[in-house]
Length: 262
Length: 331
Image (cartoon, rainbow over all chains, first blue to last red; front, side, top):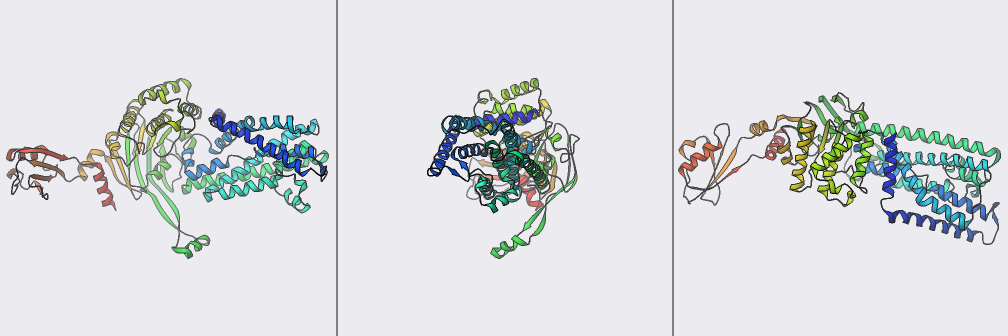
């Protein structure tokens, strides 16, 4: 277990190796936040609510969604890069489980992005944009749990996309597809409740809303009361499914390297 | 230490028809051909041996190494490394092996080598005392002290390769695979790395398998070579023996002090050597002979006895030419 912890720390060291890059990341994320603010200000200029959502609610939702969306990626990119340049073979010569290593590294970069992006964004959001507090204490706790689940789902989906590179070698197309699906259907761009009814129904059959929309809506109170637990249940269901799919793909991928030589 | 018996690995390769039509057809129906990357090879390597594993590109070298390190599952045959079947217990095997790939890096590019070593310490679970001792010894041998805290990306290729070697040997592996470890290095860096390999082999008894196209590496490090071509072993044995058995001709050139119309072979060498005529040079006498019928010293003595000689040059048999010949014979 300790080696995975050390791997995680090594990623933190890597991410902080270049101070300019580090601070540029902070500044970029704050700029993103400012743009978000300006956008919704403009949208709300001539009205007070959109589908019963006030400006303050919308800003709270959007800020949290953007914060969360930087955590729903995962180890897939690294994996795909490893497959493309052939490093996977060397990785298999090491006494660790390659997937667990990648997950450790990914957790490491998430740890750095808390400091690099999330904290500065939170400070700016709280001081200047004025996001409101969670709906209630219960909602706050459930939000944290739901967020964690959402992040884990995102990591698994990313891994699956990365694992596909064992068959396709290059996955840049798939990654773009994944990114655009995520942006739209996870609810990062706008709350899913703004979608037309039929699209909302389609969304319930996809794992994406569980990644951002569900946790953030629990925070803001757009999902409340008796609706919360089924929503979290659905999240856990998707997590299980995604986890099983990623493990299956990894088994197949491992078989492919060891039998076909990658 | 390493036992390989009847080892084979067959790949399935998608066969494509030529042209656009063939490419489109290949999207729907594929025909596969089987390629025998490694075909029924057997050898045993004892603990502490340094073995040169030679073959042209695509001969099956990497495939063999991959099976020895557990990355590939053999199609048939047995492999045993340190008493472990590598592809069944990959991680257990991985703890006892090390590797250097001349074309790849195992160090973290953006960080100093020390950080990579520290991470390896945890990955291989090296006890702190042994880690400190090994790190100290190895940096001493490779003269790396001043490089340990510089990010890898700022190191030269030679410096980086020396760092790679520490990474490969840090956990006292029983077997180390070296895949073209001196590729692209200058003479000084090569010789430093060779002497390091020698030292590690002598002091720690590390078994070393070296694949390379650099014959100097082989000649300086290996007593035994295995030559592989088309997935089959062409030769397995002593390096000097292969030199003698595959080498028919030694060649000696004499530059004579005076120009002569016709250069005659000294009488006592008649029938034992062959005269190789040289164009344009009327003062050159070039003789070839088989080392088993007559020694180089005898040839030189005889010529010196008859002529005044300004210069002598002996063409040392190069392992390259032998390997070349073996390849050609094998094909």
